[in-house]
Length: 127
Image 1 (cartoon, rainbow, N blue to C red):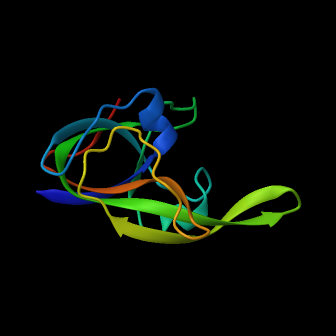
Image 2 (image 1 turned 90 degrees about the vertical axis):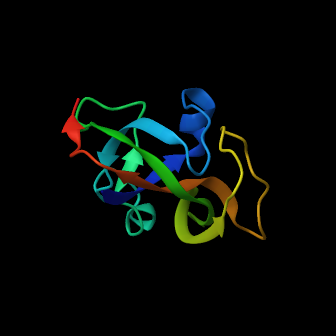
């Protein structure tokens, strides 16, 4: 069995995702978390990102696995030339059911999504 971490942005779940919790089997389209397509602050702790809205240039893989752990991610933003830049993350264990709900902020940190730890058996295949 292989393990991976998957960044799941909250807006993706609000739009098109299915609810899940620890122990559930998921079948997700994912792309590698590379810094040229994804903000660097998110890629240092994740292997893939949930990608239900792939761009033409994205390589998308099918991941079928079991959810082992869920962490709610809160982001601290810095305003730079009228643009909010993510500068720091805060990880909080999450034991509930994930279904696209917005979690309340913690201090100045804004809820932005989840890092989901997944165990999967098969090699990822491009779709």
